[in-house]
Length: 277
Image (cartoon, rainbow, N blue to C red; front, side, top):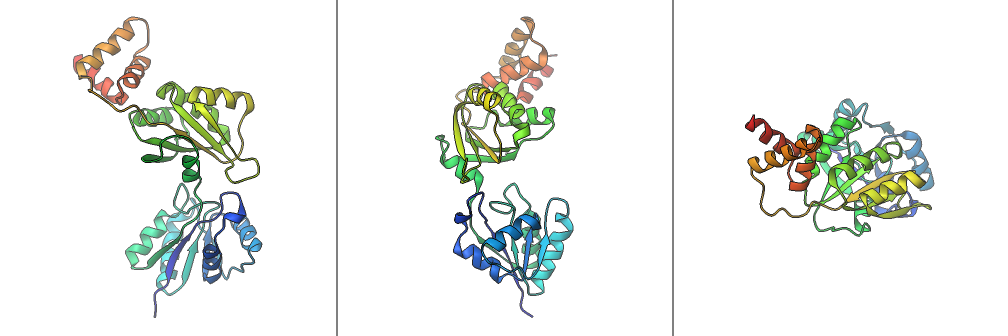
């Protein structure tokens, strides 16, 4: 009995003309097509005249169990094609686990590259593209989001983030407060009729979103931190924080301000203060 394979197939992020001929053929050849939402995928298949032999759901809810089931089907000889609602499977979408399962089982894993909102936004952002970090979605809970932004504050590579419209303003507020006046770009609905890219500082983008709003699929691209020169000593960090606290600034805000100015994680300032107590 011959072993089948898993094929990750990139699909359009908006404009259906971006679907490659190889992607269409891969879906036509598949014994099983795994997707996040059968309704959305059926529309795609219908547009390209593809009749799915077996269409199954593979999403965040059932990913653990379905990854094993799909790997077993591939091991038994089936060609399994995996698509997400848009873009590349596994990139801020389900896909990682089934790849791991197939690799562990000795199943061939192939890929038909396709559009990616993160790469598309980065390429037209006007910010450095030679080195970047894809962070995906920031945490929903504000305290967790702020902590994550503080970790990213010293990252010198360009940051690429995804965000939903209803959390966009809050995310930009936190980014502006923790990262300062960095250059940024906000790309939305790329490749679609009303797609656009807004550029400016994070604060300018925040003001624009407050005024005009922003709908659809959104990517935020932020320039990295300035290259660090000489790192402040713990004593210097603690002294700077205490000086701010002496002016009336509360401890948490003082630590954040010193961390941002020094280009270090806030945890370093916290540890420096604790060591002095």
